[in-house]
Amino acid sequence: MSVKTLFLAGTSALLLAACQQATNGSEPEVTETPPVVEEDLWTHGAMVAAADPRAVEAGLEALRNGGHAVDAAIAVHTVLGLVEPQSSGIGGGAFMVVYERESDEMTVYDGRETAPMAIDENLFVENGEVLGFLDAWQSGRSAGVPGAIALYKTAHDAHGKNAWASNFEAAIDLAADGFVVSPRLAGTLADPRLRQFTRLDDHPVSAAYFYPEGEPLAEGAVRDNPGYAETLRRIATDGIETFYIGENAEAIVATLAEDPRPSVMTVEDIAGYEVKVRPALCGEWRDYRICSAPPPSSGGVTQNAIPGLYDRLLPEEGDDAFAPIRAFVDAQRLAYADRDHYVADADFVQVPAMDLINPDYLDVRATEVFEPDAVPTPGDPGVALGGNPMVGMWGQDPTEDAPGTTHFSVVDGDGNVVSMTATIEAPFGNSRMVNGYLLNNELTDFARQPRKSNLPVANAPAAGKRPRSSMSPTIIFDEEGDLKMVTGSPGGNSIVAYVSKTVLAVLDWGDTAQQAAARPNIIARGESVGVEVDVEGGQEIADQLTALGYNVEERRGENSGLHLIVVTEEGLDGGADPRREGVALALEE
Image 1 (cartoon, one colour):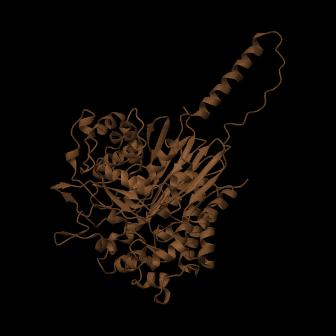
Image 2: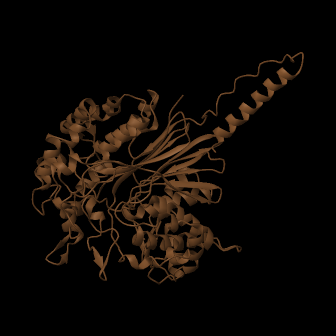
Image 3: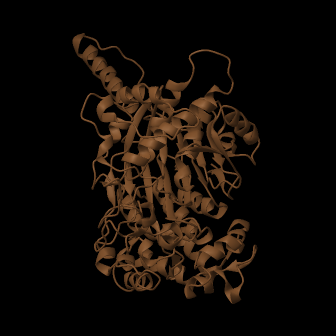
């Protein structure tokens, strides 16, 4: 029962008692009418935290107009797709976690891209050889059917308060009038490595847009995008059918059918796309309830497993100030190994998601901590929980997912929440552009090698399947069931580490939201531990882990984009990752 339900039940009991007292005596007592108590009002305000100030302002304007957090999310993301096209857009997909405060309900909208119906597990195998990532990435067959627009509509139908069309106005105006190219976008386009490895400056449409006259867009230049404006106008005015049926769908199919390695996607694949509406995957940690997206997202599994393992690996006593960092590293190594092995599209394969966060399993798994120089391997929740073995069901999968992603967090004036992570996979997706937006390369999130040791890999490609994602949009509640924290990040497979860092930093290490976002990133997946050494405190962490025997990879230029909101007694505390260009701003009353 929610706090609100308990409050209403108590109020009803008091009123019933008063009525009974008045009818039992000859002279009812005359008492003053008690003041009407407002029902559990939200008093903490509203906030948007996202990767670009223009997107944040669009979200705040939606809230000023009386919008729900979902209205703000649509406004935020459509602007991000224009001004931060390297990270996400309407040619990709997303996971949106929505919390409705009045009903105390949580819903996950799975807008993950789907594979064409004509593919099989050998999508990225040619002549018996597995394609390298670059060849798979810069190909037509890397793209899945985009899910973002359908996600907008499904979520808006359930929660939206503003008119559908109004949520697109900010992005349409910016696209039509032109937006100022930010330093990050300009720097990414000018990066010689990007130009070497992608076809962004070779594909005729994307080259004309991003490299006019052969030169990358410069910082401070004004770039309009009439194609994007027109695409959004049609969606706003005539509905999402204009995206999934007709000219736009035909353009997607035609572009993806070009060499190299043309796709087999059809207009029927696009017209048949469906958003999956799923329950959130939640677990208990200390006095908190951590909720995130279920498979094919990694969020619900990893954001519960890592804090749970962390507690079990902390020494019970002692004054070792470095113990929390070591426990965090070892917890990641265990959780990543499990995630890599088991998490995939649960509509296609058996995923023991609840078993992987079961406290009894975590008790066992914590005893399997690896030596610093060991190669982490998955656990077996079947055996640990007294059932049949599970680990032999699948071949082990080291799939890398790339960091072309964005995350934003929204709390509206009624305490409703959106945590949304959106992506086109690698920077600028697969470099192919239609009608003002880039297409994704999400299918490279599948295991390119579909079998290991003659066993199928859980995350192998299949017709209509959604690839596994590291995206971890997360909402956390306190012991009273009240909102405590909204968090998430882009960053490929490092998302798991980035997000769990903020969970522990805020709820265990005492950081503010901004301090948590700015902390050095530590990514412990597989044999090595990546440590961000160009951030204050990072080099010291790297040195201590090296001394303990870990294989440390010193990293610079981490690609996190943490945007989080924490509820405090004073109000909402926002954090925006200093590695990107975002802000966290409250709605002024």
